[in-house]
Image 1 (cartoon, rainbow, N blue to C red):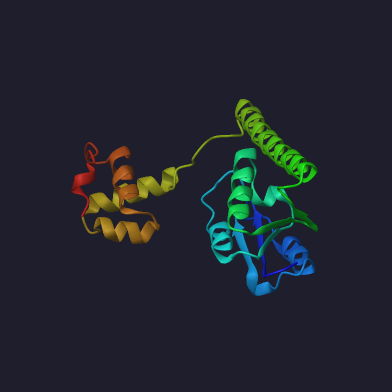
Image 2 (tube, helix red, strand yellow):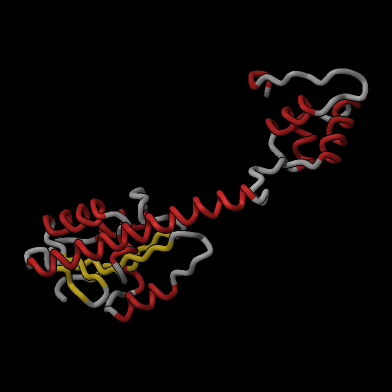
Length: 205
């Protein structure tokens, strides 16, 4: 390997760990200070700060090292686009222990196969996620966004508001919610002494 080895690792969710990928990159000759990462971003999302930094760090003669192709991209066009960009800049792309050679017909075919499988796997994950959400919704387990305040808290908030001793800011601090949430709660919660107010965003100060 000539030039400098720049490593890139990515995981799709915040719950996943990058330790295994980091260790793989270290074994492949990448130093710790030259590993760029994205945490909680999918491969289909091209807006990845860590990847942009890694691509900016490599120069002609360097090698961009990723543990597997699916860490770099989850679609065939994106994988090809990154590989073509690196080739134009004179940067090598290493997938695991294999250096991708775009001038080799067999290597190019293998790269395209890997990219196709990465995209296929990504499509399967999305499909299974949608199916899982549909099943959960049918069973009544997917209830959507829950209110920030319980019914009891909403009634207490309205009572405190009607007393006239608490400002919107005071209520926001007491119930640990935003001012717009306070206004929406007041608008929805009936007053014991009269009709609820109609909140307009322009009235927030």
